Image (cartoon, rainbow, N blue to C red; front, top):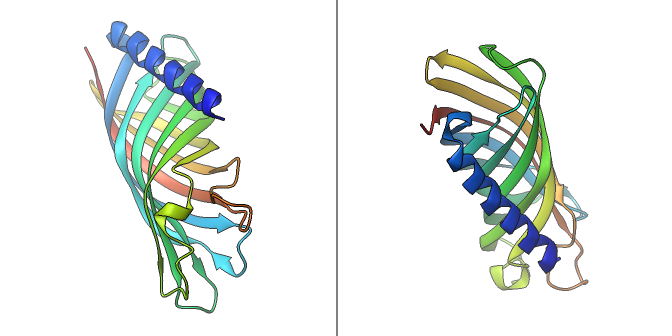
Length: 200
C-alpha cells in the first residue's frame, strides 16, 4: 500500500510539472461542492451531508483525453438510523482523474467522464453522542486509499473562464480502522462546481 501511495504521489508531481511546462493546455481554479458520506459495513448507518472545498488543475493537450488533479477538504463520516449519533471525519482528499471528453476540442460545452484513484489524509475524527471512544482520530488510519468515478461538463462562459461541474461517487479500497475489530470503509457521492482559468 505504501509503495502504491508513493507511486501515485510521484506520478502526480510529474503530471503537475508537465502541465506547468505546457501552460497553454492547462487551467486551474477553486471548487466548492456538497457531498453525502457514510461508513460502509456499520450497522444502521446512513448518509451524512457535508461540504467539499478546494482547488483543481486540468491538463489536456489531446483531442478527447486529459487529466484532472484535485486537492479538497471534505467532511465525511456517517449518521445512524434511529439514533442521535454521528461520526464526524475531516479529510484532505487528492484524486487523480483520467478524463475522457465526449466531443472535440474547440466546443464551448464539453461533457466528460472521469475515473481514477485518490489518497485521503485524515485530519480529525470524532464520535458525537456515542457511548465510547472508538470513533476518535487515533483509532483510524491516517491514510485512506480509494477510487472515484464522475461525469460532468466543462462550459466556456467567457474567452478565458470555464465552468467545471461534475457528479462523483467514491469509496475506500481497504479498512480505514486500525484494527480488524471493526472493518469499515468510506463511501460518498457529491456534486462539485468550480471556475477554471488558464495558467498562461
